[in-house]
Length: 397
Image 1: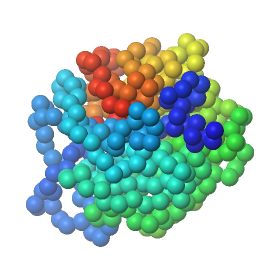
Image 2: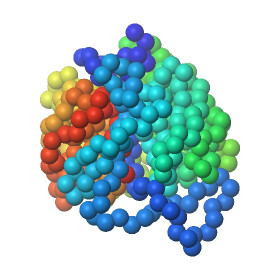
Image 3: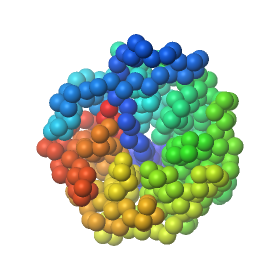
């Protein structure tokens, strides 16, 4: 079985792992732009921040695999109560194959999904009417992560199967243009037990000028400078984990000087120092995930908006690890774990206000919701998990 196939089907069998991180978003559902706002310049889009009542249902999008037995039919559509966390299904967005990872444009008008197949692609969907705006090839195999650059003009994607990262332009309508760059990780050599590179995440650093690619296959985090006019990448630094760590997902502290890395293969996490002027990342010593030494594959970190607490999804241990963030982001202190109320939590995300945490549980086909205590970092389960076939990504707006 190829590395890409192993990544897709590991949620149904024991003994492997892989997936994507969805960064939390502060975007709101689509709404008309304020009439007094100046028109956007060509290639730019005006951010929309409509006001919502605290009790108004909010949209939730759930990614899945459509080509596996028992999978979904597309992106599951749902709503959640921002007070209680209760989720109600509303339908399915079809026409997007294997949408295993989702992201939203900063203006809240367009949804983006990976098409995690051998001939990888990324798809744009207009949220106002759920119209598919089209797909573009990534140039690689098995795309498993995507993110929108904060400026809103570029879509970044990571191909797990081919170990490559790609850049696509975002038009004024939210539709994607032809790829402007593609970089395949050919060095350093793959880590122990891996046959090649496996790009698992492609995300923008807080400084905005650097984008970082986490590669599980080469045990490396690559830093690139993004040319925001041309959409091209220039490598500026590499940071290597210890051999066999299998880095999967990186999340930045809001201070912009530190980040937290989840290492899937050796079941560890690490605090990283980040230098904004150079884009250089320095990876610290391995730390525990709270899994108690059993079979476990950490998936993704979240950090609260105030930078006080961090949460880690543990697949296998089926828990959410809680960390206190100390020394202005330079240190993580493990506080304990909370059962996730599901099997194999592949991805986690905050609601825009940070009061709820959503966990997509791949093997149980559920989405668990937790209330987040801002003062203590405590997590409290918000009722029964929501059933959704092969839930691998939950995106609350």
